[in-house]
Image (tube, rainbow over all chains, first blue to last red; front, side):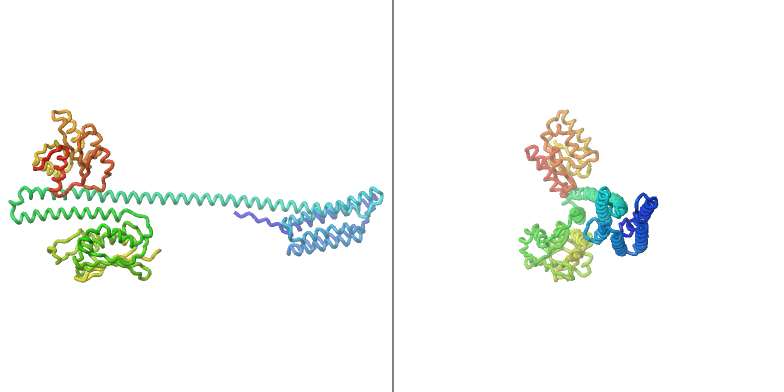
Length: 448
Length: 132
């Protein structure tokens, strides 16, 4: 809803004043002529009528022209002033004619901060005052018995100018009121809009909080489910182990060789099931617990990952070359887990003595590429991709391992891949049997 | 006398066999209520005061180990209590200890480890050696 903008304009005010002035001029002129005709006062009727005609003509013409532009209106007011002055001079009292000139000059003064409307009001007020002084002078002269020729002219001017001033003042008041109403309206609109905005924001926040809580609850449920399932699976596996051991204790030496082998195998399988569960639990814990993102110095990460491997490194006489590593944006503890896993695999598999492990990094197309390289047995062809799958392990013949037996539970690398993918990255391996392995982790560009 | 409480019958069988082989008298219970009943009977009967120690599973079908300990606080006062669990990482150790447990262990899968754990606990409780 738009309120009409009230803008006080010379044109409007001038136009308002013109009919008032013309009417006032004619009423006074009529009055003066009547008084003269009735013989009550010796008004010079012809000059009065001439004056009034002249003023009317000027005003009507300028009224028409005022619709065109404020400057034209001003121009006509000036002309009116000059005409009035000339007429009054002709009629005998120059001072009366000065009044219009005074207020015209006032109009031309650009510096007054009252604005044009205020201008007009002030100018006309002054003119009225001036005219009152002249009137007073004439009246006192009249009292002293020698009236000047045009005391009534002063009355005319006073009335007219006060009228005009009143018009301007009321115009100004109207415009100011309009503006105040507009302002109040705008303020109300603003208040309403900002209240609406606040409402929407708080509703959104509540929605987001609710969905965050729901997600949290879901994650907790998930975690509880996984925990209770693994707990429930552990119990029977545990029992199998214990009972198999009991059989072995009681009758182990009496059993046939095949039965003994079977029994041993039962126990080994149960044990493997247990450690798979244990690994799964531990890794699930790591990959599911969210951490806030921060700037992670991979040098620090690798140092933390190497700490628990110190004794193994010492035992195997190994040394890890750590190059200059960058800082990436990610979840600190999870990244430690990634490198701990890659490094512990490497430490486990490199020969001793002569084992060598190196970590370094480079940038490629803005992405950060970290490489963990070892001179272990390498990975058989075809397993480079599946090695990252859950529960997939690879056979490592040679190195004194009996065929068919495998270390680890096949969980570690799967979790490494999961964590790296959570960081919008990629992990892969380049390897050849007998030539060692190079595990690469790519972290995307910052801000990607 | 050892009171062992666990709803896992297999574990209970193996544990009781271990105690039997070491000549340690054993009372077994499979629920919290049973356990409390046993404790009451023991306290009232002729063998009052002969309770050496208690081996308690963390989660029983009708109540948790913590609840059992709280309810039987008077009965097990001064008696060493060991709480066993399948999932050690889920345990609020502080709360369990506060309720009166002296030790918390993950249930071992290896027989030899379990035997050592149980018998050493009994030995410590009775101040004797019961290993055969």
